[in-house]
Length: 283
Ligand code: 13P
Picture (spheres, rainbow, N blue to C red):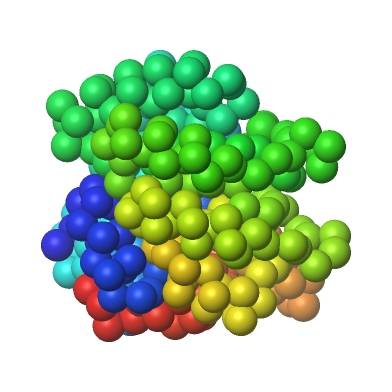
């Protein structure tokens, strides 16, 4: 199967009542761990990259790693650009080999969000790349995008329906009350709104802010139409703690050993989420 866009895998997920995990990798080790976990569980997977990570490593290095790790993979792997506001970065990633992109123009007024999303959809369609777009404002920090509690607002149902009719999206990300980062209290998810948006758009829905949600919340969101679940913060914790804990317990300066511990921590995190989201065995 190898590298594919998100369209078919998310339609199958929505229809089949499960979700595909979308994990924000940070380097080669985390890419390898995520893809191997999906392969071992025979699951489709979305490996996604934040703009900051693209800037840190460069698009060509990242694209080389995913081609090497996922090119010969027996499971479908989508390589996705997460929350991007900059069309030039979208272009750069499409040219480098990404199979999927998110244009996040949700901070702009409706018409401008639509215009930018339309521009990205046209660019992506030519390359066979799938597109995710966002509406409303998801609270918290993702990459360098910070949305305060005061500025957060949920997606409007009528606008969401109209928006999705105008552009060809693989998945739609409406703000429904989840947050990026660590939850400070119990999240209040607008299930009715999620239900209405999923029904009226007919699209697979992306659930942002996956870290810290409990099993029952995931289950209900998946039942209501969430087919892509984003996990970033939990992966950052596994990535750093996996390495640091191993090192602090031994204090031996053999880098490959803590790197192996880091690999195993990320692998376990990804595998656990794949099982939880019901995508094991669906590749
Ligand atoms: P978390 O950092 O809460 O896992 O959210 C991830 C996300 O939604 C990335 O876009």
